Amino acid sequence: MSRREGTDPKMGFNDKKEELIGGRHAVLEALRNGKPHRIIMAEGQKGAIIDEITALAGQKAVRVELLSKVDFNNAAGNIPGNQGVTAVVSPFAYCSLAEIITLAKSTAKEPFLMMLDHLEDPHNLGAVMRTADAAGVHGLIIPSQRAAGVTATVRKVAAGAAERMPVALVGNLNQAAGTLKEKGFWLYGAEANGDHDYYRADYCLPLVLVIGSEGRGISRLLRRNCDLLISIPMPGTAAGSLNVSAAAAVLVYTALSQREGWSS
Image (tube, rainbow, N blue to C red; front, side, top):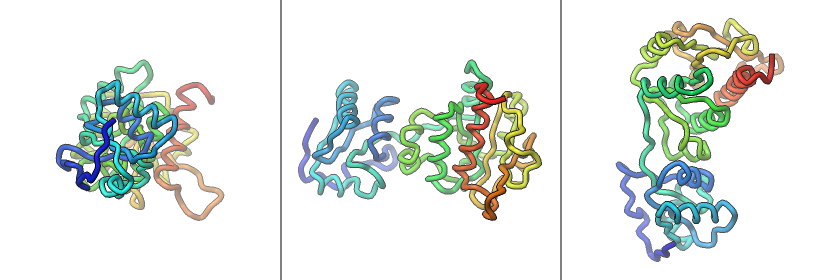
């Protein structure tokens, strides 16, 4: 571990080739699943996760830079929830639609993907990614335009899930939906006014769960490409719908419970 005094606030950070992620769990998972360029840590950090980060960084020959709290705040104070630890990493590496289909079909279980229709809030994307990772979803599909991408904020909210979860970036979701159907996938769209209650659907098949954007839901053309439109009943509120990430969690774990045989 090296100590640097009077470090320049930019830390030599190249925003075209590198980005800064913060938070103990996010940094630890970045180390577990790859090799960050370096770790930047405020002095005085303690705890089991800090010990694990330091040990793993040593094993992978990743330099840990220990800074005074003032220098650390200059370098990383704008990273929300950094917990005194950040990592300089390469920008998130997306995969192609063909790659994510191949990956999903190579698993021992029926493929399970999620398509996110122009989510704009990076916190929602990070939360959905975290849930999908926990439930064993094989990958996410997101559009390349007018939507949140996997940024440092998303990686922080995802709490390490972004370092494991494959994400395909596509130019046209409708074309991607057509390709997926040709490959044998069924598309289930989540809609407030869907025709089928979510708990009555059959999730034990090659599945793409389509989640709409905040406010607008699933676009008209993509809705037409869905094989089934499912809804979550809302008997106890006049709000009309759940938050995107909350609805995704309900649907993903309903699918998982059926696919794993936890429920009939």
